[in-house]
Amino acid sequence: MSSGRSFYVTTPIFYVNDAPHIGHAYTEVAADMLARWHRQSGDDTWSLTGTDEHGEKILRTATANGTTPQEWADKLVRDSWIPLLETIDISNDDFIRTTDERHEKNVQVFLQKLYDDGFIYSGEYSGLYCVGCEEFKPESDVVDGVGEFAGQKVCAIHSKPLERLEEKNYFFRMSDFSQQLLDLYEQNPEFVQPESARNEVIQFVRQGLNDLSISRSSFDWGIKVPWDDSHVVYVWFDALLNYITAVGYGQDNENFERRWPGMHLVGKDILRFHAVIWPAMLMAAGVKVPHRVFGHGWLLVGGEKMSKSKLTGIAPHEITDTFGSDAFRYYFMSAIHFGQDGSFSWEDLSARYQAELANGFGNLASRALAMVTRYYDGVVPAPGEYTEADLNIQRVVAEAVANADAAIEKIALHDSLAAIWTIVEELNGYITIQEPWALAKDDAQRERLSTVLYTVTEGLRALAVVLSPTIPKATTKLWTALGVEDSLGALTAQPIRSAGVWGQLIPGTTVGALEALFPRIESTDA
RNA sequence: GGCUGGGUAGCUCAGUUGGUGAGAGCGCACGACUCAUAAUCGUGAGGUCGCGGGUUCGAAUCCCGCUCCAGCUACCA
Image (cartoon, rainbow, N blue to C red; front, side):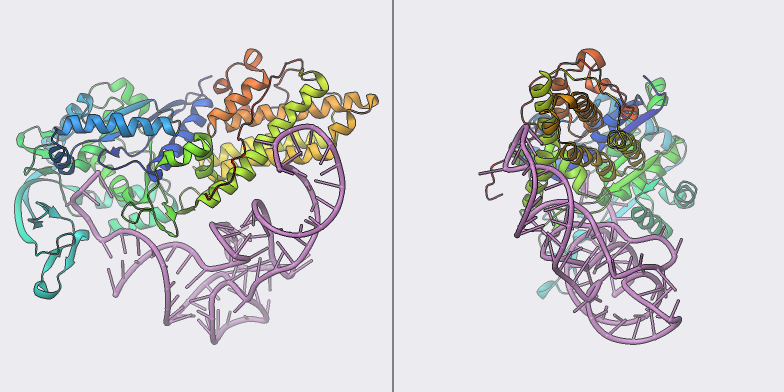
């Protein structure tokens, strides 16, 4: 069953202080759909997610909550982030925390190597410091003062003047890698995707890179710099390394060779860290860069980026409580062009659920199995001679599977589902035209009826297999109802790339009852 | 300010290198059918392709200007 191909996909790790919203869930689902698809294709698949737990912010909230940062992080991981994965039915193979020993220890290994090889030096970090925030402010949080502070730079939060302070930091010689990065983007056009993201990254690097301050000494919640324990590692530098420490960097070379390099799925807001800083770090350390970095778009609510401050943040469970995890997964993967920003609205979600999942796919399964039960006592009949209409269905199924797989290779998740959905549409149309209920009234048409119902049921079998990575719960129910567990094996063991090969369903199989896969949801004000 | 992406039917969006009367899904109207989750199938109505110029035999598609929306402008993750 193994294809011999290695497929390693990662999501960004969650900053534990955030509240889970559908943006986090969106990335997770996309990575999971890819992982399930590859896993079911026989590829040597590994999917990773996890949490980012260091940094001053976490130290502060922990202190404010009267606890230690470790306990605070433990609580958030347990109460927020692990449950999120369950809410949206993620099948990750591993979950790394930046407080794991395997991570902390090997971040130090990595850093020490860069230090020994001369890529790190001690310098002065000069920045604008806000006394109110007790921290250095990035330029994005700095605004021009007004009124009595006109002409000065002030903190966006406190509106008070910032002080220019200097602090001893360790710096990474990132500026040395500008050209190597540009060469990478040039020689490997797929390294950063989609195209629009690639252009922005190239444009940015062309302006020249500054060295990166990678340590902090004003607080101590982080990984100690190995040669100077008065400093902790800058959180991003720490966090990015999770992608390799999770698969054995520094301690399990065999596993590391097996998994790395992988591909990263990230939101476009953190693309720069992944497409610039991260490969530069790896180049310095002599480690291969990732296969690719895919920056997806944002979910827009009311035309704007979803945000907590504007009260447009939506918790995943708000959707799954009503529609279920399958609908959540299907909706975001099919309705939004992966890579571009996409609009979310309850109306759209509700409409698509009804039209596509309930009326389209769910009802198809329902009417098909009902007829097998009604006309053949639940035993799938053997097909007779195929007509052009039947052969057309076979072609549609084969093409849909091939097209869906090709789309997955391009990380065009929406295209993949669109290809698969042609099967649903063809099958519904086929049933209407063939009118099995009319055939059933005429004994002379018994063989024709058998052929029609076999065709529909076999089509459903293929649908269950290729939809399994997207809507695992519903397809599992369908698989059980099809009664093929004994003859064909578990759903997730069905090789997905050959799902379109006709005739896998064995006549004589007894189908069972099928509850509504996607029951109608009584419309509310949603 | 600079940079990027975008403004196409009521809604969400497709529209390769310019060329048969501008498309899809949903929604809507009408019709067919009854196996099915009051589901399905078919037909139809609906658009000054943001605005103004220009290039061209011909532009939603190229060039110039304008306007509107969103985002980015590095060490908060």
